[in-house]
Length: 223
Image (tube, rainbow, N blue to C red):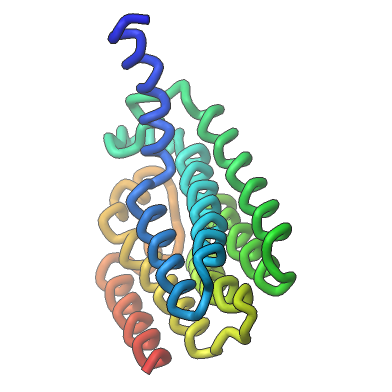
């Protein structure tokens, strides 16, 4: 096989990996592993937490790009491979999202206690409901609140221990703030493609303000 054909074979793999939003996937997975270590998980438990959270993040990221492919193509988003670079890859990304979702559910259900597994599955389902159909509605923040709250619930319930209420509240507030502040740079593109979630309805200044309030509430809950 020539060097050129090898590069061609690897190119879709690279595009597929970039479709999963690798930076947030890595950040959330590593942070979850650190939290797992901090609350008393041994090495196997830390790896389990990282595996469940990591596959969940992969599933959500791939589903997001597969569902948004047409909108991303309409505004020619250079940061989304399915928009310009790999338009024929949508079925592959959708399939990867499905496989990652099933793998996450199987891993959580087979390896953790019912409360922890339930929290993990609820977090995944909530995040996928954001991708469709809640992203373009006033309720777009709800999946962020639920899914971020589910992370510490899953990690601590898997120890096993009772998740502290203030930690769950703090995680939910951080999730809501992340949604609002993350959307601000893309408000114009979202408006052009008809996405009317909560940040788009609030506008830039109010999204920043509410995001700051939620961040403050998260810090208050932790303190």
